[in-house]
Amino acid sequence: MKFLLTVIFGAILGSAATFYYIYVNHADPTEQELMRTTLTDYLPFLAEYVNP
Image 1 (cartoon, rainbow, N blue to C red):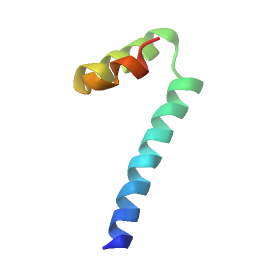
Image 2 (cartoon, rainbow, N blue to C red):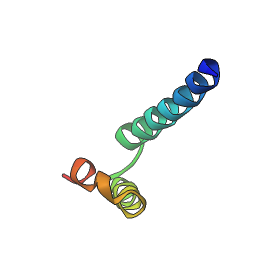
Image 3 (cartoon, rainbow, N blue to C red):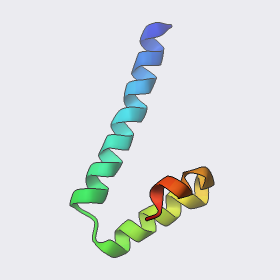
Image 4 (cartoon, helix red, strand yellow):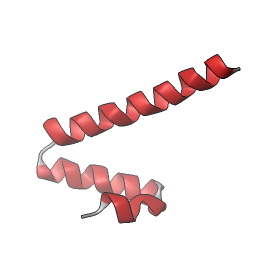
């Protein structure tokens, strides 16, 4: 069970890190705005952390 939770946690962390890497290094300002808007539309409690 611990192994499964570790794998799931690693997948979530890896996905978040990949998203952030793309956001910082490959997205232009328009795409960054779209990514922020999408995140805050689906997870509104993140708005205070995501929006500048």
